[in-house]
Image (cartoon, rainbow, N blue to C red; front, side, top):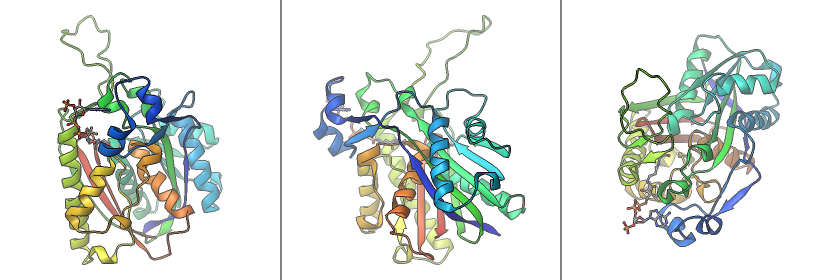
Amino acid sequence: MSFCILGTGMYVPPKVVTNDDLSKMIDTNDEWIMQRVGVRERHVSTRETAADMGAKAALAALENSGVKAEEIDLILTASVSGESISPSVSCMIQNLLGLSCMTMDINAACSAFDFLLETAAGFFARKKVKKVLVIGAERLSRLLDWTDRSTCVIFGDGAGAVVLGEGDGYMDAVFDVKGGDRVIDIPQPVGMSPFYERGQEKKPYIHMAGQETFKFAVTAICKDCKELLRRNNLTFEDIAYIVPHQANKRIIDFASMKLKVPKEKFCVNIDRYGNTSSASIPIALDELNRAGKLKRGDLILLPAFGGGLASAACLLRW
Ligand code: UT7
């Protein structure tokens, strides 16, 4: 027994920041950002927390699924941008939804949505749950150095959610982690202990070696998708859609070229939301679902990659 997706939902805050808006704050321009990243605009929270956005995406997914909030047995949440370490973002979402079920956060940065699905599959396999909410919720605007043009133009805020029920839609997944803080790093403040040896402290913002991340991302998408297909005796022709983590439009284009898979098979919405880390796959999945593009039985690949460094891909039957 695994699960199937009963419904999807998303939420983005109302404030839209365009590339032209950014070019008034830092030395950048729409042409560079569109060519190198593929982002035209992103939504930015002025007030709402990651948990506030996650709860709104969850309510949209519940409505889409026809499942009542009280039926949820478990809330799994991914976020690197919650306002507090404790309570966790999933605890805050549980509180906002007025529920009393078990909750848990998983930190696997931009790949986390796939790690959440795999965790949910374990609960279903052990028959511990019947309905699960899985949420990626990010307020990355609070982790950005808004004077650093190499990072602040890429990311955006938002949340995506799915409601899972018993079924056989989750077919397989692969995971790959190479731990280290050299390529992507979001340090916490060091702390005030008078006993610490002080060195040069890195600012608590997103630091990223862009080109190294880019190469890692393209390699990861290709390797993880091919491995999943090989293990399940499938080819890309059997796949209806690839819903990748929206890190950079050029990463998706490169992967499409290397894999010789038509671009139309890849869902892309980074132009409107930027990179929303763990929220990007469920947001893209919700758009696909609500556009009526998914038919029961369609096979979907969800490749993800990012901080850790971690990568993953899931194979789902809709
Ligand atoms: O989800 C987490 C995973 N993150 C990612 O997957 C991101 C992966 N990496 C990337 O998407 C790209 O590497 C970036 C978008 C971060 C950077 O693109 P790039 O093509 O690798 O550019 P670059 O870093 O090599 O910079 C090229 C030039 C530099 O100028 P010089 O040294 O050639 O004079 C930069 O200073 O572009 C300059 N530049 C900019 N110019 C205008 C960097 N950022 C900007 C900017 N506007 N925002």
